[in-house]
Image (cartoon, rainbow, N blue to C red; front, side, top):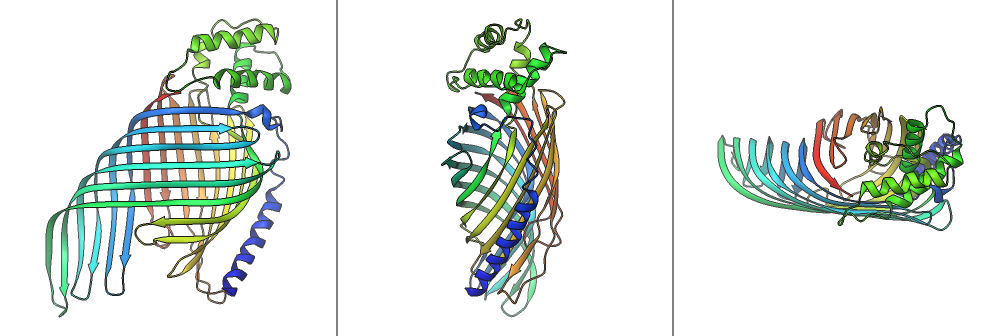
Length: 434
C-alpha cells in the first residue's frame, strides 16, 4: 500500500507541473470571460443509421481455465438517441440515452483451455446485437470557477450469433487433432464507468457567440462590431433557442422574426432580407473556450476481465476559440489503475484542431499519445509502452434536419497490453429533432 501511495504521489507531482506549464495557454481570449454570456441549452432526438468497424477482445480466467476471444467486427445498426446539454453559470450538465439494434459480422481467434482440453481456432461470426447506453455528467459550480463533478456511464449489449470455428484441439494427453464446429450462441455484456471529482475552471460553449459573429459578418460586411455587441446578439440567439421543445418542434420562421426584430430595435440595424438559410445551419456541434483542471477517484466495471478497476485521476483540458473558422484543443489525463492481477499508470494526451470552412461542415484531426506502464510495486515498474492514435473527424449538416458524422482512428500499439492496434471507423447518418 505504501508503495502505491508513493506512486500516486509521483503522479500528482508530474501532473501539477503539466498544469503549471499549460496554465498560460488560455490567457488571451477573444471572447468574454463572463460565464453568463455563454449559457447553452439544447435537447436533441436523433434517429438514423450507424455503420462501424473495429476490434473487440475479452478474456475470462480462473485457476483451471482460460477463455480468450478476439475479433474484428463490422456492423450496421438503427439508432434512437436522446441527448441533452445544459450549460448555465452555476451548473453544466449533459445526459442522454441511446438504443441500437442491427446485424454484425466478424472474424478473429478464440482460445478455450481447461485441464481437459485446449481449443485454439480461427472464427467467423454473424449475428445481431442490441445495445442500450445511459450517461449522466454534472459539474456544480460553487462560484465562477470551483466545482464538483459526478459522472456515470452505463451500457449493455446482448448478442445472438453463429460461430464457425476451425483450428486445433489438444486433449489432456497432449494429442492434437483438427477442430471444426458451427454453433449458436447468445452473449450479454454490461458495464459502467463512474467517477467523482473536484475542479477549477470551466469550458464555456461559444456556439451562440459563433453564430452571432457569422450572421453579423455575413449580413453587415465591412462594419466592425464590438465584443459587447456580438455578446448581446449571442444572448438573444440563446434566449430564442432555449425556448424550444424537442418533441413539439419549433418554427424557424418565427425565430427569425424575433432575431431580426432584435437587430432592428435593439441594435438599430437594418433587418437582413435572407437570414433564414444561415439560421437553419447554426446547429453545429458544441464549440468550447476555456481551461479546467480536475481530479478525483473513479471506478470501472465490466462483467468479463478486467472486471473491476479502481483508482484516481487528474486531468487538464484547454480549448481555444482561435477564430470563426478554427478551434484548438488539448487535454492530458493521468490515472492510476488498480486491478487484482497488476496495477498500471496511463497518461492520455490529445492535441487536435477543428476547421469550419462554413456553417455546414466541420473537419477535425489530431493525435492521441497514450503511454502506459504496469506497476507491481514502486521498485518494480514495467516498461513504458508508447501508443499513438491519429484521428480524423467530419461533420456535415446536409440540411436543417439531417446530419452526417464520420470518425476514423488508427491505433498504433506495440502490443495489446493497453489497447488493440488497428483501425476504428464509425459513420452515422441521422435525422435530428431539436
